[in-house]
Amino acid sequence: MSVWPVVALGRVLSPVSRPVTPQAGTTYRQLGVRLWGQGAYERETMDGGATEYARLFIAHEDDIVVNKIWARNGSVAVVQRNLSGTVVSNEFPLFEAEREALLPAWVHWITKTKPFWEQCDDKARGTSGKNRIRPERFLEVEIPLPPLAEQQRIVARLEALAAQIAEARNLRKQATEGAEAVVLSQARVVLGNASAVSTTLAGYLASDRDGVQTGPFGAQLGAADFTADGVPILTIGNIQFGGLDIRTLKHVSRDKADNLQRYRIRAGDLLFARMGTVGRCCLVPEESAGWLINYHIIRVAVNTERLLPRFVHWSIRASADIAEYLGQTTRGATRQGVNTRIVTALPLRVPPLPEQRRIVEYLDGLQAKVDEVKALQAQTAAELDALLPSILQRAFSGGL
Image 1 (cartoon, helix red, strand yellow):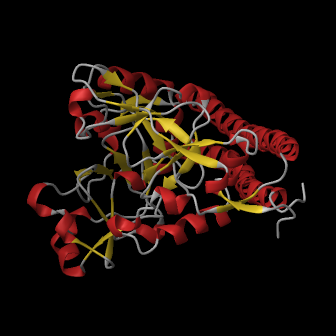
Image 2: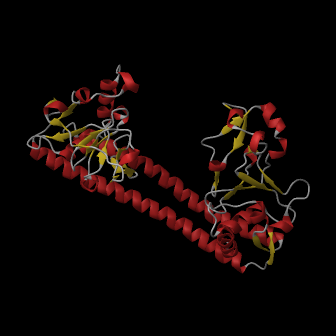
Image 3: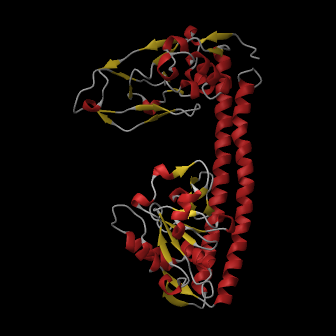
């Protein structure tokens, strides 16, 4: 509970309007507002002839800008100096703070709190037009209001603590990236020193089925075929260097999966993303055997009696030869990516199978240590994420 007076925003904010008539041939900087108190940002520029609005409104530094539709999801912000002069439509009403009573920076931090979002949600309920919050209803939202000097003290403290949290996040990110870089550097050295034969992937494809397979295209598989459950089908976003990302999965019915039998994958298959980061690939784990792929994925099966799929994966991640090859083959392309021709011609330095095993075991061991560090970093990141809301709760109840 706040130890200070709680007042409606209408007591300390006033609507402000700086209209401008958009002109064709004139470029306007547009202002956007992120959700959940994440602040304002500059959107793409716009020609005045491209807008449907008869008037736009100029935002100034320290204005409070409200997204009528998404204020209930924390889309309220204070305009920063670098965004002064941007424009908004009438869907983004602007307000000025009464400087004798309210610091815009005080509002900035309040917009990051759950109670503020809940009030905006409550004030938007029951209105027409997708629960837009009307400006007069927004001004009914209540905030704690200490004296100006106390606002200044708390804001300075919050800014200092937020900077420390950001620095901690940055240090954790640098530690993780540094560990990954060490592993890849060591992998490049080990692969380069292997007693290997220079060849290409084409000479090591499986003979018991199609060595290279692109997913179904055209009428074979469309959006209408996706179901809420059934047989998982992988799309390009699931393919990551660290393995399959299955936080979001699409599915097809079992009947449809039977019709797409040739596109099923097996444990140990290599999956390549056809677009995006060039060479992005991963291995199919045991638990994903029998799943399907879509058109944006290339599946490669190798002869495991001669070549370990995991050795190929490490080579793609770290080989200087492959990096140079992919750079040359995709340079100048309008849309970077790979195809079956590029994949099968990947240059490989293939040592005997026992040496492949030793290399894979060594590099997998290094990666496991990095993954342990990343797991610990994820835990501390979650703790950092919870820290700022806790600090804000204390701040606005007089405990900071």
